[in-house]
Image (cartoon, rainbow, N blue to C red; front, side, top):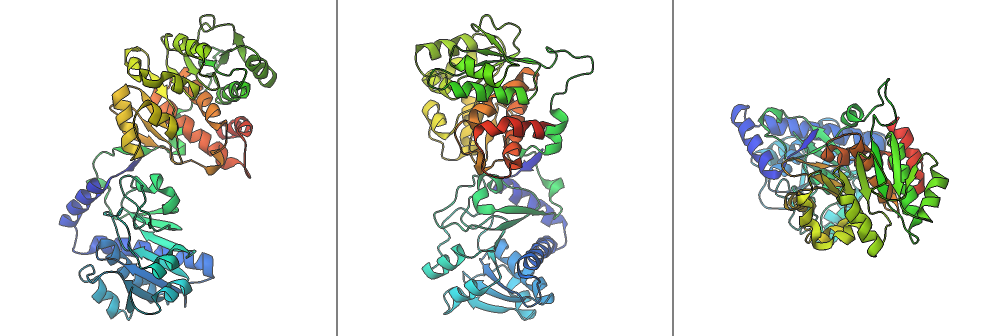
Length: 472
């Protein structure tokens, strides 16, 4: 797991490391790494670094100091660098060192500052750092020039994006690339739309960092944990997942959910639901076994309930029947709506429950979200369930465990029915015996990778075949 560390954790670790390291050495490492990324981007975008124009937006804190020292390294490589100071104060010693290198200095209010930004090949955002999240407050013409610049490199976190939550201020800077130091922060995923590509520069912070409160699964971790059929296995040895989904109005949801489960490779999928949903399922997936009722779907190791079942009395009966089975259960879509204010009842289940709401469903059954990471954690603790909060960076929270933030999200998944496929994938992993938090996070990881593997826009029906390649 790659750890995500909050502002206070990073500041404490930096203070501990600086107490042992030579004065200024951390900033030198950080700024040198920043300069190397800038040089590479200049080569890729402008054909070379020599003679390219770079503007540094310099704030009063450590990020401004990093930008100024990086400017000094860039000048040594023939880059024309101008520092635009956005505050009266600068990080001690950084401005003097930059001036000694011959770097040009202007102030944000000087005439022509906006033109300077527009004409630059690359702009470095060193305005705010770990304390980011407040409004940036740039003058109108400067703010517009920054907002329309095509190649912005943010130092640590884009200015205006809150480090711990990823929530942007209304004038937050959008970066093409963010260069972060020592470790990743929650904002790098939760504020991914503002951070762009994130590059990590090692400054030796690792030994000082505490256990992470949140993390990200890697491809290798998912690969190692994905269930495999043993050589002497049979159809029951990698789990049987039951799926209660679909209705006359939403027959397609059943087929999508079953498809996701089958491509995740359980031993068997048992489906409960009447026609036309059952007809759609068998037509699309003849491998699926249809059962007349939950009670008659024997030997199931986990259940998925909710996609497309409707919110009428029949849907409610299906939900109650599934929740009464003493195996792990995933509740999605209409099942979440039917739960309503009954979430507390799930604590009475002996087996685990996984809830997979999008933001609207989450707020209907829990509370207003605000900060997604904190909200998912609180909902998990309150309900005793694993909570998968869907979004651009899906969050999986479980009581007593670090939250897992999915790094494979894709805007291609923002289309109807993709959540039904995800529910099936996670259900299959639950049936295979994976710990529920890992099943949910691994399912989201593979689901995202499937969307990324597509060559263009997708519909939900494309995902099962894309999943087959990803799982392989």
